Image (cartoon, rainbow, N blue to C red; front, side, top):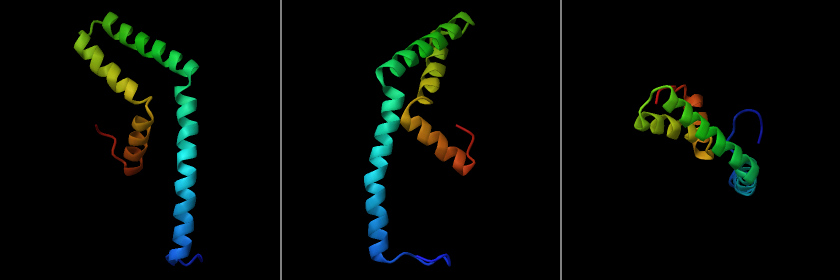
Length: 95
């Protein structure tokens, strides 16, 4: 494939997609292990519990605190991170 923006031929495309299909699962597995290992999971649980507790102590209703805590937790999930990255890439900053 040259630098003049030509489309790859079928063989090149097959090789590219083959590499992607092999490497992406490995990357996702590594990220998942880093995010959700037992030590990190324990820290996350404590962090989320503290976040909820502070919202309640600040005077929020349990329903309000739950919603904000749920949204806060979504930021720690791999899916949530990917969704945020896609939104940021599109320039879509509103929920």
